[in-house]
Image (cartoon, rainbow, N blue to C red; front, side, top):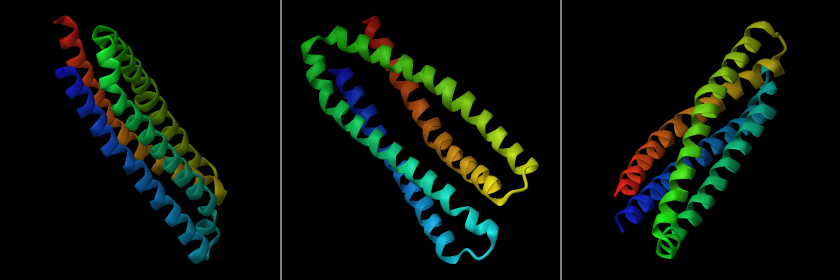
Length: 167
């Protein structure tokens, strides 16, 4: 039953962190409205659509992750009671796949995209391109911050699962 507590604690901590996607998304949406209402220069007006898109994406990511983890949290005891070893095996597989995705997407692809966006800012002169690149960098930094801590939690959860599997 110790594994159920660890699984539930992990899911609960994920449920705590996913609303930050929504909060930052709302911040981007508010910024979009602000640029729309108060933007006087061409550069300020260029931020309207990129911040709207980034805010919408972050809200969608946050809501999707929240409901996924909420459902997973309630299913842990049911799955464990059906077959404890199969539960540990499936959670190990899922944690390993998640860590691999974090390594590929969050820690390699996102920094690469940030570098490309930085080059766009330097080499392209149109306000919409610069605003889009700056907004993309801001959104990706938010994702890096939140998913960086999530990666550490999954790694810790994976270590607990490995120790349970050995027993």
